[in-house]
Length: 96
Ligand SMILES: CC(C)(COP(=O)(O)OP(=O)(O)OC[C@H]1O[C@@H](n2cnc3c(N)ncnc32)[C@H](O)[C@@H]1OP(=O)(O)O)[C@@H](O)C(=O)NCCC(=O)NCCS
Image 1: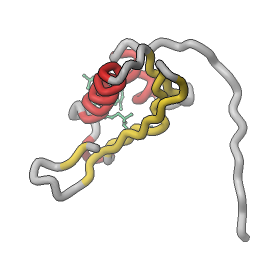
Image 2: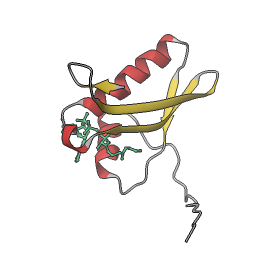
Image 3: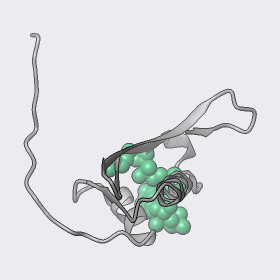
Image 4: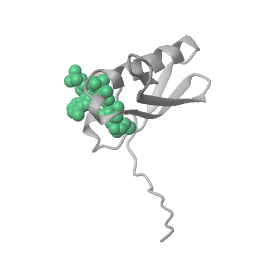
């Protein structure tokens, strides 16, 4: 979690799960729009990677849509590279 200096506001969040013995998968990373471009996303990803490394992981994976230019740019800057491209299914449930 990324919090404000006096700890009273959540500014960003990263969720991660271990998908196999040595691999962690980032399922979500987000920073409030008004706090983006200040290094928060990078910090969350680097802390997550350090924590996974310290607990025996040797790789971190994540997925992103090709059109999400800011996230793609962030991941590239941190050394992530494309391993696999695939079509995804968008699921929906409607009430009205
Ligand atoms: C992706 C996201 C988490 C990045 O968070 P952030 O705090 O803005 O990222 P940082 O400030 O650490 O940016 C680090 C680098 O990422 C890249 N980057 C981030 N935002 C960018 C943008 N809008 N355009 C281009 N590059 C961008 C840049 O290379 C940047 O480095 P620089 O500022 O030195 O140029 C944020 O944009 C976000 O919450 N987006 C909405 C949710 C989302 O799409 N999450 C990813 C799901 S896969």
